[in-house]
Length: 324
Image 1 (tube, rainbow, N blue to C red):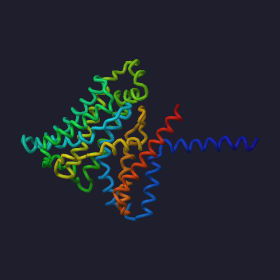
Image 2 (spheres, rainbow, N blue to C red; image 1 turned 180 degrees about the horizontal axis):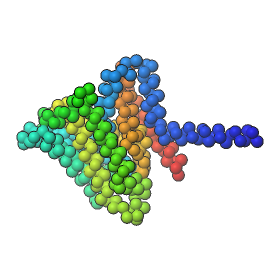
Image 3 (spheres, rainbow, N blue to C red; image 1 turned 45 degrees about the vertical axis):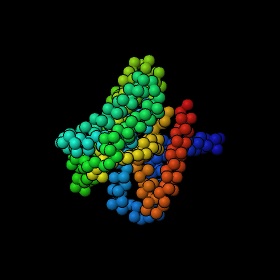
Image 4 (cartoon, rainbow, N blue to C red; image 1 turned 90 degrees about the horizontal axis):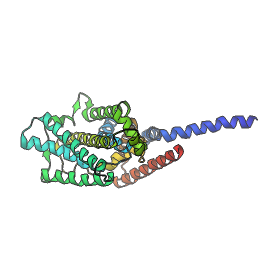
């Protein structure tokens, strides 16, 4: 009797621990990684280096916040890197050729990203194209338009855009932009009808449609938001460089997807959060920063990032099995 009664609480405790690790694996991994890097290189936990990590993670995090909306609905957006470049280049072109005020060029860049995302959403929701194909096409179109607009050369950006890459006192604006984008993502997901609809669509699109949710219209809004966040990320990146680069943010879509998945978003849809995505983006930045401090080759860094993504997807698969 004694062994039987003690084994049940013990099994419950073990189950609770495993459940906590599955649901908070990114946070636990981030804490453990930071401790390990501090032991390996004391320079890691210095204030300048932590600020550097925040700046490095800002663009990826902003892209990933927009990607979170899409992944929650069981979609994917491969165009965010190219849309980021197009938004920044459109802003720079308006500044250099149309003579628009700096703040207005910033608005133009954001609107271009919003429009590009909305077009992907229309192709997916009403054109019935798979999200993979629709956004892959947009990736090619956006990158091509960026090269056409710029003629393959960098363009200077307006002062308002450059402010996004500067500091306000001791606070880097990219970190501030990341915080604002994160709060907006959290608010939309947890405090709006659209956010609740995203989870419903990702959980079961047909059931969402039968319950009266305007699925097609909501999907257009979701991809438009992804484009808007991508354009903001592109403008922050351009602000850091004080110029719009035609090949800017190339490959960043993979980091954005990785940050979402590492942070607990399910590629099957119906799961994801702004907090988890932020942790995922910071984790990627910490890995790269730590490996740089230890003078690890950038080639091996790609290998490590790939393994981290594989582990995160593995956790997602296990979580999905446990919820069935």
